[in-house]
Length: 137
Image (cartoon, rainbow, N blue to C red; front, side):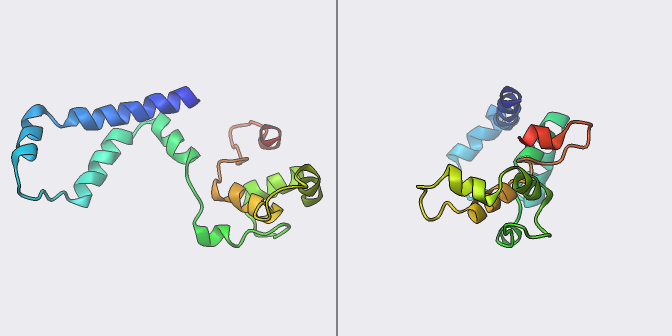
């Protein structure tokens, strides 16, 4: 999957570069006038360049949880995200303490769970028949 992501991102970058023909780029370089680009035009261009299944998979795999939700994550909290609960079922706080007895003070079990929660795809839930727990292990 890593190579596919790299190829997809390379294709997007190439598409952006190639979308500006030499005729369009030359006046931009020689003009001292500021150029205005509408956000709606950028959004439309992004959608055109990224609207295919592989890119959707890439975007899904790098999606992040809002910091306000991440800060609420605590060991054993019933409202923790599903991926955090999965990790908690696999690696208990006592295991964390045993595995990392000489860690920096910031490397707490709670902060580890927050890091997992920040990225929902890490130990996420698969709905296509794959065993999410086995994959996470």
